[in-house]
Structures are given as C-alpha cells and as structure tokens.
Amino acid sequence: MASSSSSSRALLFFFALLSLSAVSCFATERNEEDLGLVMDFYRDTCPQAEEVIREQVKLLYKRHKNTAFSWLRNIFHDCAVQSCDASLLLDSTRRSLSEKEMDRSFGMRNFRYIEEIKEALERECPGVVSCSDILVLSAREGVVRLGGPFIPLKTGRRDGRRSRADILEQYLPDHNESMSVVLEKFADMGIDTPGLVALLGAHSVGRTHCVKLVHRLYPEIDPQLNPDHVPHMLKKCPDAIPDPKAVQYVRNDRGTPMIFDNNYYRNILDNKGLMMVDHQLATDKRTKPYVKKMAKSQDYFFKEFSRAFTILSENNPLTGNKGEIRQQCNVANKIRD
Image (cartoon, rainbow, N blue to C red; front, side):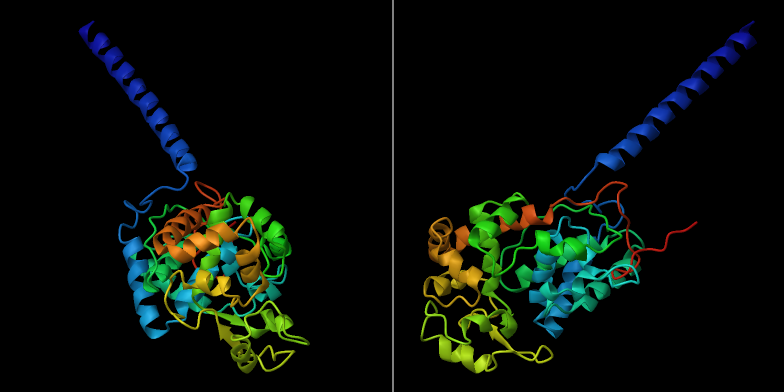
C-alpha cells in the first residue's frame, strides 16, 4: 500500500514538472517574440557587441575619416524607408534592384566597412548580431567620432530579406520637396518639427554632391543664395551638368566641416545652405524658430538630435522571430529546405 502511494505521488510530481516545463517554454517563446527593442539586448548572447562596434568604428575612422559621414547617412536612408531592417545594404539580385543603386543613393559609399564590423562580430559571437543593429550603432558611434553626443540606443533589430527600392521614393524625404511634404514624411515616422530640424543638422558635416545643387547655380544663380558664398560653389561645381563619375562636391560647412556642431544653423540663417531643403528650413515659419534656437544653443541641438535620432532608429523594426540574422550584410541568408 505504501509502495502504491509512493508511486502515485511520484507520478503526480512528474506530471507537475511537465506542466511547469510546458508553461516555462511557452513563456520563454512568448517573451522572445514580444521582447522588441531593449537596452543591452546582447547582454547574455554577445556581451561585447557594442564595444566591438565602437572599437571598429574608431579604427576605421582613423583610417578613413569620411566613413563617419557614410554611417550617419546610412541610418537615414535605411530607417526612413519603412523599417530599420538593413534593407539598404542588400545587393541587387535577378529579382530585385538594390536600394544602393537608386538615384537617391547617389554618392553613398563605404558599405564595405559595415561588412568589416560584421566580420569582427562574427569572430566574437557567430550568428548573433544583426546587420540592422550594426548599421544603427555604427551611425551612433560615427556621431561621437565627429564630436557629437553619445546616444543610448535599444537593440534587438533583425534583418529583412528584401530590398525596398520599389517604395524608396514614397518614404524617403527629398532635398527638393516642399517643407510641407518633408514635415509630413518625418511625422509619419513619429518625428516632430524640432526633431526634423535637429536631424537635418547632420548637414553640419560631410558634403553635398554638385548634382544636388547645380540647379541653384545654372542657368542662373539663385538670388536667395548668399552672394559671398556663390564664388566658392561655382569653383567647386563648374559644370551645369556634372560628370556623375567625377567626385565634385561642396563641403556642407566650410568653417567646421569635420565637426558635428550647430554651425549649420548659423550658416543657413546667413543664406549659405546648399540645398533647397536647407534654405527652406531657415525661412519656413514652422521651422525657423527652431533653427534660431539651435543656432544659439548647441546643447538644445544635441538634446533634440538625440531624441529624434532615437525615434528614427526605432522606426518599425523587425524583432522577435521576424526577419533573420544575416551571415553577410549584403545578401539575405539562403533558405534551407
């Protein structure tokens, strides 16, 4: 009788353990699916991930300072087009055109350095860190290299499998669009007016290719341009139809071209903005008050930039079981049968 009672208790204990195990597995699966973006996502799976990215960006920046501009531009061109899923990095295939090959991506380069960072992470923890997180965090570190603020960011993004070249024009704001359209496209991402003004402050560094500004110089000089700035622009862009293979450009900020600061806002208030969107930012009644405020206070600019950058980096990411962790950032993983 005692033996029968012991067996019954053992069975009950066994089934109780099975039930707890099932509940635990279900909860774990649910948490993985619902986790979303979190701070220090790789704490357990690749604790050195963010440090590896930081060190790689430092090394690459020492070798090629222009890489910082590329990383900064990457996050805008990727995250503004429907999702932060590293679709920008995908090469063309027989079925789809790469976003990198679109006219709107003219002048974008240095994608190979994202691959270098990916390779360093694969050596540290294979198959763990997504290309979309690398893209976002390298942009963050690029801002720091240029003297801008450090921005704490959530991670946990996963990579998409397809190019979004077919819808790029629909989502990506253009430098020649009206301020109303630009404001609307940023608002669709959850970025308000001061956030838009701050993000365009990224034009504080880098350069504008002549193809994007010659319409303000030829056949007639735009009278809204500061006449003291025009000779320099004409010298840098001597042709009405620039050779697309030639690297012809004007530095966005001649005063501090390699420093991420608020000098951009003082320039555009002085009619030295290179693109129409720069000029509109300083003259439109909806944006001008924030331009003036950021021209006066770099702290305010950094605060608003950090806030807007964070919102941009969290635009409709793939998380949980969606997407994949690419083995190489320029190609989607092969689907196994």
